[in-house]
Each structure stands twice: as structure tokens, then as C-alpha cells.
Image (cartoon, rainbow, N blue to C red; front, side, top):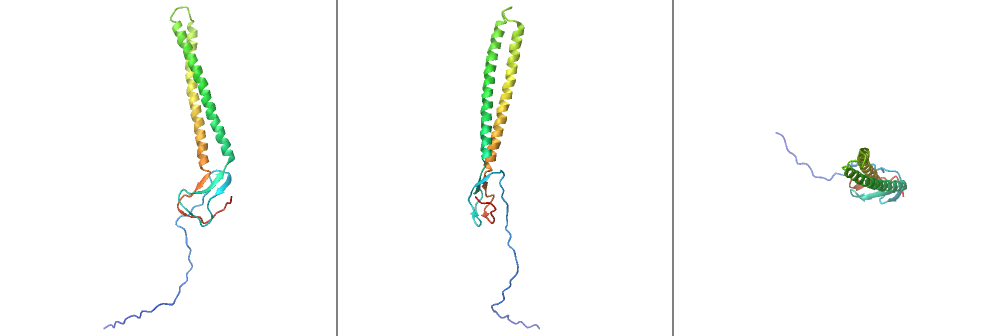
Length: 168
């Protein structure tokens, strides 16, 4: 037969110290996508941030110059297309009048009608090219506008700032 003995209830006075390390669940180093000057930093070490919160603002004067240049290229391409369309309207009107006049034998040379028709066809090609130039200029402008969005550095997730390697 085995005897059962009750265990005494007592408070332990032993403290156990063990080395350990706390690692974050998520960690990320944040870098700017464009080069520029630090205009403003809104956080410091220990700051709690939320997803999308502005951490820093960068200033890039050359990006502003590129935007102004791209905007002027869009305007120039638009103006050029207006000129081409005006010429196309004039050439179309001339062609229609020559074609109507050619209905009467001997009034207009047949070659003049053909030349007017070819001018109208060439104008249509220039209109298409002008529209494509405007699209290309607008895409370049949109690209620069997107780059301007990179001047704002935001928090990718909720957390605490643990390092800051730049100062304003």
C-alpha cells in the first residue's frame, strides 16, 4: 500500500533571471522614393503612428520644374493639334469646292482635285499624330504628379517609431 501525503502550501522566494530579447512583430525601414530636401519631420523616436499618417515631407524643387515643363508640353501639343485641325478644315473645304467645281467639265484640272484629296488625307494623319502627342504629354505629366506623391512619407502600418536617421 502506498501512503498519500499532503504537499505543504508555501510562497517561493526564488527569482529566476534569464537573458531574453524582445523582437517586434513587424519591422520596416522607410526610405524616400525621390531625392530631395527634408522639409518637415512630424515624428520622433517613441511616437505612436497610425497607418497612412504623415511621417515626413520632402521638398524637390527640380520635380516642380519638371511638372511645369510637362504642363507646358501638354499645352503646346494641344495648341499644335488646334493648328492641324484648322488646316484640315480649310483643306477639306477646298477639296469639297474643287470636287463640286470639277463636276463641270474643264473648270478644274483633275490633278488639282487629287492633290486636294491627298492633302485632306495627310491632314487626317497629322491629327492622329497630334492626338497621340497630347496623350504622351499627359502621361508624362501624370507620371510627374505621381512622383510628387512620393514627397509625402507615410506610415505603412500602426506602430511606434524606434529609429530616426534624418533631421529637419
